[in-house]
Structures are given as C-alpha cells and as structure tokens.
Length: 401
Ligand code: HEM
Image 1 (tube, rainbow, N blue to C red):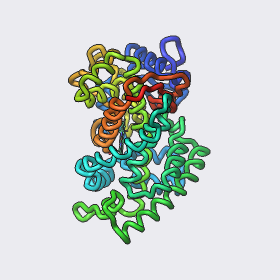
Image 2 (image 1 turned 180 degrees about the vertical axis):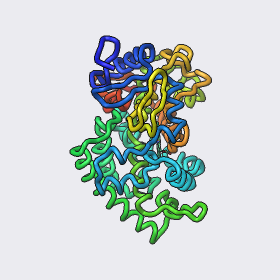
Image 3 (image 1 turned 120 degrees about the vertical axis):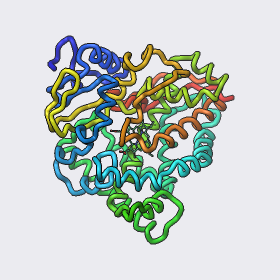
C-alpha cells in the first residue's frame, strides 16, 4: 500500500479516535488486508480475518523474540509472559496461571473492589469537578491487582511508574521496539525483575493467601512455575490489567456522555449494566490491535503474506465490521448477540476479562448511585487510538446525590 488518497498507513494516520475509526471504515471497504511499507507491517481490518488470525497460533505466532534485540533483562522479563508465548509453552504457563487465577479468586475480590472503589469515591466526596482517570479509573485496577498479588501499599506508586514507562506510545501501536527503546525498557525491567523476585522468594519461604503464593504453589501434571516464569506473569498482570481497565472505565463514561438516552436507561435499570459494558467494549475497544508474526507464507484475503511478517489484527476495526454487526456505528446497550473481540479470541483470550468486567461494573454501580449528573468537562486528554482507545485525563463535572 502507498500513501494515496485511498488510504494512508499507520504512521500517516492521526491518532484521534474519530480519524482512526474513519481509517478503519475506509480500509475495510477498500483494502481490508494491506501492506504498510513505511511501518513494515500488514494490517488486517475485517472481523472474520482477525478472528481467523487469533485462532491459528501455528501460522500467526505471538513470539517476537527473534525480531527483537537480545537483552538479558528483557528475556528474563518475558520468560513467563504468557501473551508472548506459543504452544506448547503457552499451554503450560496458561494452565498453571489459570489454576491460581481462578473464577473463584476473582469472584472473591468483589468485596475488596467494593471497599477500594468506596474509598476512592469518598476521597473526592462533594467535589464538583473530578478527574475520573486520576481519581478512580487509574488507581482502582492498580490497587486491586497489587492487593491480589500481595504487594504492600507503599510500593504501589513504583508499579504505576514502571507500568507508565513500559506502556509507551510506540509499544501501544504494536511496533517491535528498536535497540534504543529496548535498552530503556531493560532498565525498568531490571528493577521490576529484582523487586518481583524478592517478593516471590519471600512468598516461597512464607506463603500467604495471595496470588503470588498460589502461583508459587501451582502444580499441574508434575509441572510447576519457576521463579522467572512467575516474574513474567506478575509483570504481565501488572501491565495488562491496568491501562486497559482504566481505558474501559473512562470509555463507559465517554459513551454515556455522548448518548444521554443510554445513561438514562441505565439509571432506570442498573441490571442493564453488564450488557452496556460489553457494548462499550465493542464501541470503544480499549486495546485496538493485537500483534502476530507469520510463521509461513499465508493467504489472507487477496494477499499472500510472506513468512516472518508482523501482522496487526485490528480488534477495534473488527468490532465495527458491518458484516458482523448490524448498524455497527450505533451504540446500543441492549445489543445481542455482541460477539466483540475486545478481549481477543482463541488461546490468548484475556485471562483478566472476568476481573475487568467486575471492576468496571462495581465502579459504575457506585458512580451511578453517587453522581446524579455527570458531564465531561473541558481538558480531556486521550491516548493515541492506534494503540489504546481511552482517556488519559477525563475531567468531569458531577452533582453528588
Ligand atoms: C490477554 C484485552 C484486562 C490479563 C488479553 C488480550 C486482549 C486483552 C485483547 C489478547 C491479546 C492477544 O491475543 O494478542 C484486555 C482488556 C482489558 C483487559 C480490553 C480491560 C478492559 C485484563 C486484566 C488482566 C488481564 C484486568 C489481569 C489482571 C491478561 C493476560 C492475558 C491477556 C494474562 C494473556 C493471556 C494469554 O496469552 O493466554 N487481554 N485485557 N487483562 N490479558 Fe487482558
């Protein structure tokens, strides 16, 4: 693909949500599979193709280490990163992690999430203007995951700092980091590896009931996770779980602000909240692309994509595909079925989906109960929608009930 009026590549594309969605629409219509020479990647925009890519891990690999500059701290950090593994290593890590991170563990978190959300809302009590992100949507998932892992409260700001520096704009848009960026990431990862290793060793010596202790003890068919695999998993949980959940909560508020009739319907019938959250996930997909590497020459649509290429499977575009969703640009909190791909598909389907749904539902129940009026104020700032669909800063004018 070249930069014609028909479609521009990723780099020539502005990162605001409206133009990214317009780009998706244009590309689905004209070039649903396209090669982006400048970015050195292939883009895939249609729902059926995206789903197929995510379903076929033999052809579309999640392992990128061969494309990245080798770096000891990075290698160590990703050893247990289930998101970046193919079978059979993926199966071992995922099964063991699922044994520790069970639906029961998540359901048991509801009371804690309740308390944390109340504390965060109490801290802003009566304020006519709040920043949804700084005051609630960002701290809530970080505190939940840190508590779950048994990380002491005083160390939490450090995790926020690490996460912010690892989830930089270029890594969000799915590019493989270059040598300079790898070096910068390695500094943070070294610090994080050392911290996590210390924490894991303490839990090995003195187990508690936290997730880290469960990961240390998890055993399946005689297999266990070694310390480095646990480091990678803990690191992934900290990174994967917070920026996306923050984005989702901010997106719920943005969608309700744009669609007051949906906000009124939810206030009248809070039981509709889970369905509304699914529609927000579809309509404003928090993590826009999933990245894969081709292991062989493969036909996608009209193109043969050679082996060794990076493919960006655009979840956010698939979720607006008119061949999958009737009136995809309509926000409909009662949409059924709603087969969105926002948590991925296939073997890498998001392990934290139940937790993210629970956190956002509890937070929204409290928001609707405590704020009788909500409007988005001036000064909102957004992530680059080619990576993360969601707000960085979301000032709200609120009336307390
Ligand atoms: C995987 C999205 C929250 C942990 C994924 C994938 C997506 C995703 C799209 C698959 C990526 C791929 O196949 O390339 C989201 C969204 C979230 C969210 C939109 C919030 C709204 C969370 C939370 C956690 C979490 C709260 C944990 C605390 C994971 C893990 C994987 C994953 C461990 C890797 C699973 C595997 O590779 O087998 N997530 N996620 N996520 N997510 Fe989430």
